[in-house]
Image (cartoon, rainbow, N blue to C red):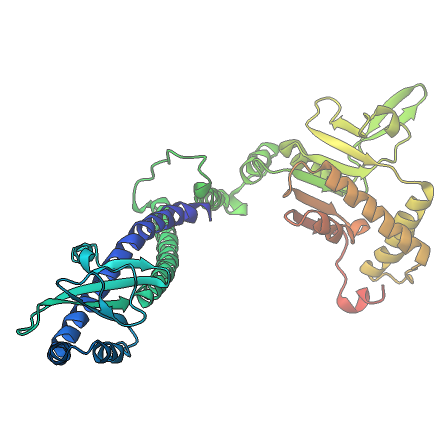
Length: 435
């Protein structure tokens, strides 16, 4: 949108300046056309009335002459008609003839700009046409036309001109935005073509420009795809060692925030006499995920079940592990005995575990265990949100103890990548429906 405004705003300002300069020019041009039309009409009326006027003047009847002039003013645009003899100061004219027009001052209406008279009734156009009569001393026929319709048409012309420029501005702006968008997309496609090896890629001089952010995002995505293609090798040809796993994780998860959630913690602190001992539980989850966390330096969220766990954490319930060389953070969540009994020993182990293993033991489901299970899952979801330093972390949810956790995390972190894995058999729909 900001890029489109760079095209639209200067264009609209330029069109507005053109319209502002063009309106007075249009008024002058249309006024000149109307004055020329009125002069032609005046000459035509004078030529037509010259012979009847000659006869009336020879008879010397002023009343009949005025009646003749009154019949001429039946034309809707002809406001008044008068005749000025050479020696008269007042014209022989119709009743509406303007009093400002004097026979001894007709020269001011004969110039190119003097034909307009601003009377109280409105603007008038005055045409002075000499009349040659053989037997009567020559004079001038004065024709006064109403120019109010000229002002009305000028206003209409200005209005139509304004609408024209508004429509033109909107049309040109729309076309400009469309062409700019099409050109921009074409340029982005050109950059993608360069990345495919069809040309030379030159870095942009405006790396921080907002309009280049979509291009940078596409380039980063494309580079990740290229790196992944090179990293995906045949597993049968790979010798898996801690070093090779660490290198692979650094390639795949570089710059990503990784959070592991499990019930069992990787290190347990217990009181042994007056000292604190650190134990590493014999857990498949810990064995599988420990190298990942050491390589990614993430956060492991787990239930703090050791007798000395509370004594060694900081004010935010964190501790760096492994103890000999801390590589990631362990965040402990504290559960009461009732919560642990309902969530872990009750719903998870007496309900889900035998159901998923299709064991010949009837699973036990209690409302109190289900309430505790939901409550503990919610507690861990809040811990994940609190530990997230970004809006799109990678969260590895471990085992059937947290069946509700992925949805709860998704509600709070819509952009997170959530991977859930159960370390027990996955039930079929018929068996799981018993739950």
